[in-house]
Structures are given as structure tokens and as C-alpha cells.
Length: 210
Image (tube, rainbow, N blue to C red; front, side, top):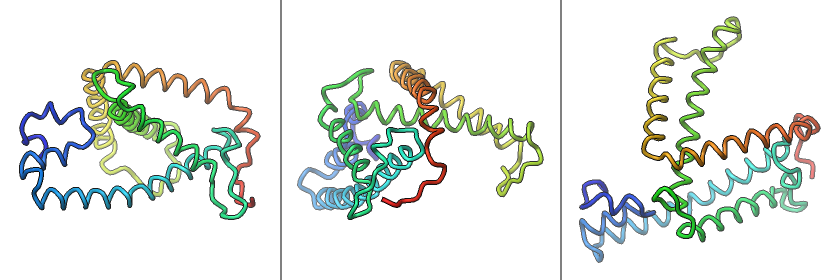
């Protein structure tokens, strides 16, 4: 619907394209418009709880396994929640909100670029997953597999080719963002190498005892 509500280029770089398209179609004071806004508001509040729960536990788990500073793996003595991970992720999120219009590159706002880089990450993950599947089938054919990829090798090969095409398309239309993504990927790999001893010293299966 947003793509057919007037000029799509005016909706491409804003954070709320659906309400803006709805306003163009039914008018700013329409009851349908107000219903959409309220439904979106309640959905946003409900999503916040899931997002906070997800990012805090991910930061906590990575810190406990040695991928992030151990300081972030502490839990609250009374509530038994990863309070430091919750606050750390919240600070990053608030900083991103207030710098959305201040940090722009590639013709997009910070939020749009973060979303684009997350898509880059997802596509790269798909490609690595498919390559790993082919490698494991060749190097360890007798490995126990609770789930087998259907129509192997045709279906995984099709998924691999499609993912490569998607990645090439993303790079073509977002070249500057692709460079930034590659830089972050390289920095992440360097950090991974530098924290090897920290991961080796971390407990393999620490329990929540604090």
C-alpha cells in the first residue's frame, strides 16, 4: 500500500511510511487513520518488552561466554535479572534514536543504515550456512543429522545462488553502506581474535548463581 500512495521516493527515507501513506489515502483526521496509529502504538509497546528481553539476554549470554566484557554478565542480587546488560543495550538504543538525523551517509538516516546493515548480515549468514552445509556433507558424511535439507543438493544450491544474487544487488544499490558493513565485519573479526584468551577462561556452562 505505501508504494502506491503517491510518490514512493517521499516515503523511502522516513521511519513511519505506513501511517504517512494511510494519511495520504484516507486523510489526517479519518477514524481509520486514528485506529491505525493506536494499533501501531500498542503493538510498539508490546514489542518493546520482547526487544528488551531479547537484547539483554543476548548481551548477557555473550558476556558470560567471554565474547563481551565479563562486567556485562552480572545479574541483580535481588531481581536476578541481567541489569547491566539491560542498561547497556538501552543506552545504545537511546543514543541511536537521538543521533538518527545527525549521522547520515549514503543518502539515508542512521536508522535506515542500521536496518540495511542488518540485512547485509542476514544475507551473509545465509551464504555461510549454505557453504557450511556443503562442506559438512563432504567432510563428515556420517554425522548425525536430526534434520536433513530437502532435495539436497539442488534446493540448498538454489538458496545459495539466490542469496549471492541478493547480496550483489544490495551491494550495487548500497555500496557505501556495504563498505561500512565490511569494515565492521573486519573489526569484529579482529576483536574475536583478541579476546580468544577471555573466551577460553570463561566457564563452559555457567549457572545463574548470583
